[in-house]
Amino acid sequence: MMMSALKEGGMLLLVDGIREPDGNNPKGYFEYEPVKKLPKGNFNWLSAAKGKAVKIISALLEFLPEDYQYRVIFMERDIDEILASQKRMLSRSEVVEEKPLSDKALRQSYQAHLEQVKSFLSKKDWLKVMFVSYNQVLNDPEGEFRRVARFLDNLVEPSAMSKVVDPELYRERH
Image (tube, rainbow, N blue to C red):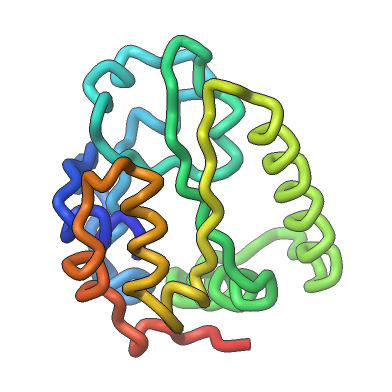
């Protein structure tokens, strides 16, 4: 949702369109394939990202080089909703896990990951971070996107961003 909102609000995105919209994400994924190569030290694409939004999953943030200043909009969501969404995505894609973790183990693993990532983010002065609740965006899109606009030096238009919020896509309510 955030990448779509940033685009609608006037921000340029660095995306490649390789992963097309599907039943799991009907409005698209807004991904850029070279991001996945951060752990291997592939940073040559970062200069092209200057002034643009790039989607980076939390597990890859620690691989960003200190050569740049970054603004990270970290989307947060109820953990039970995340786990339910992941299960549904795997079910739709017919992926079968060899040794699936229990819900409790998955929850603990994800919570530990989030704590580790948040600790990392808090210690890096070259990363400015803003935490945004997915649920709060659904409840007050205009207010949350005004916060995002301030974080981004008003380079985006909050009212335009609000137009992308689609409560029909909120399928994993907890």
